[in-house]
Image (cartoon, rainbow, N blue to C red):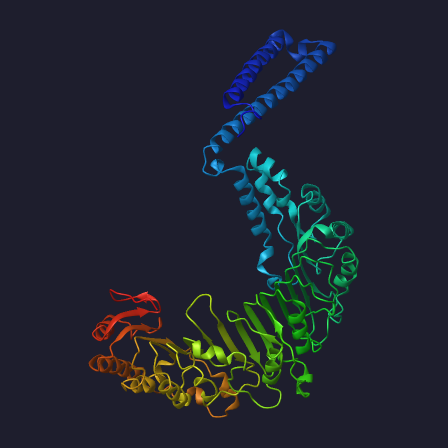
Length: 592
């Protein structure tokens, strides 16, 4: 509290004392004036009509004076209590902070309350308006009230669906601060909000819009398009982040125009795209669509027009990916695009041929990570590594293979992490990993995320070709692990293995079995879980006696029998440490 701006606690209590003393004197005077009314001579039956009327007026005047005295005393008490509270607040930790830091804390609090940064994909329809209840923190104390009113940035977070009064208040108190706007077109836009946007487009820094047509049978998004056409006629020199999501029935193209935003660094478009030139200032672009009009040519256009990209994610639903991919792929370009700042690229869902065609257009930085989603249009696909990613494979230290995806990466934080997935709609499980496993000669960690007996031969073939593994993670049903655990007793298989992790695969039908009419999901349920347990003990003991002792055993959390005290004692005879999915059980742990 600033002592120069408000009375001290002592002054406030002195003022209260003076008020109470004055109140006592006034009450005494009123009592003196009305003392005659208590005498027997003033009984109403003994007074004339004029005397009765006069005495009534005197008594009522006393009531008015008493009410005024009480108000004065209440006000003084409240003022004194406020000063006491504010003085006590000055001894709290937050009050000791510099005012500049307190401004940042209050601004961040408002930003979190508005919840603008979590992404409009989580917005529900019909949508709730963003909260305005955070304004109540201005009543905590005079200092916070003053700070909030004097900090335009606090009032820069706006939901266009608010009522007129809060919108006008924000327009005044935000002054010239950069604005952060959210609008769900499901909530009607009144003239105040429309004018607010039209008048302040030049101040907007972040803009998030989600739209769904009001009519079930319409997909034109007129509730969004009509005001948007007007708003973008004004330049947006401070716009840095634009996110638009046009929800509705799929398959129809939603082409929109973009504002003149020379500083735009992030653009997120869901179910829409633009034919207008993209700002060369873009550092991040995310596009997701189920529109057939968005093709691989648009991907190349994005890469050409945005040379400063750090993140690029373009995903077209495999259900509606462009049928033009069945047409002969155009010739590869003679010159290539350089994207020196690119760190993450996600492309999908395209055929292998189109993916190769896209990659032929640019040079991938060494530190960029790539995620690809492939979808077949003629024949089922198998795992593959695009030509541009093949040079990374010999450097990979880790490989993870799941049902419809595999990824490979290095252990260094600033190096690549690539993954290739396939659309499960037409994906057929591979019976061999030959197309990829030979590309990874230096793997130290191998994660088998969908071990099944049906593909035991495939996994064994892969393990025989990976002689440098120090960590092996196997995810499968306990009832099916006996086979591979028994095989690992072979000393020529994974001779450098130090960490063995076993994870439980949920007992659910294999999605690939939908193409197989035989009841494979129930084929091995009659196998005893104890058989796998016996093979695990045999494996650990054999490795120990062969001087190939496993240092750490990681067991699945649901494996209560494998992780009970008697079994833990058995495991620790032949391993240095046992963990239950990251929780140490034995006395030592080893960093994995």
